[in-house]
Length: 301
Image (cartoon, rainbow, N blue to C red; front, side):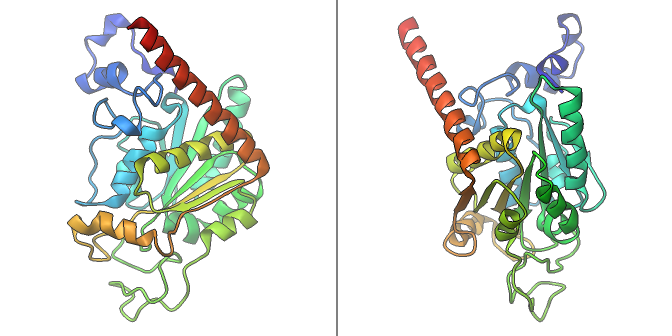
């Protein structure tokens, strides 16, 4: 992918599907976050607009936010595995690689290295987006080894605390005592300490959160991607409830996400000194560019 790749020749543009033409003309490709970002979702052609997720799915909202927050969508590839999330991720106008269950971080490791060899003069962002089962249960070994090796890509775990795609089995990320369809007596063990494991394995930027604040959640996504480009593996552990398996009424999904912020998904952010330097530099540059653009517009008026 590249901006040149997604932009059609003028002579063929009239023959292309309307959705594609609108995506090129009014989508986020080649645009800044001010022009097409989370703060104005619904006012531009988004990368993901339709999906087969359940009504009120908090995971679907967060996936939409991920794609609206990408620094450079035309230079991004996402990878995933079996689970609810891939139903929406695969609908986005960004290349998506669907692997065998749990091997997304292994594939991302090879892809990241291949991009650096094939495109040494370009920045290609690689992001794995998978559920708690694919990331921390069945995919645990490949997730951990990608971090231990210091692979430069971002891992985003969509934690709905259950195997929601296969009938409601408990996962390693289910909280202790959780009563589910296929765990009627309640889970016996504790919830896996995913953020602690990520830090111990060498992740240089780690965040645990319930993404109720759009601006803050978008900032975290971008920070993780920018740091992964230069420093090392980054990890976002996001609460994305399964309102079906946990019987959360649709109108209460947001309230549930807010409630989780007070407990096991209280906001936590870890970064190494090198990661902090990247974040401060990039956000400083973005702030300066925004200020310059504002001044230019004022002068033009």
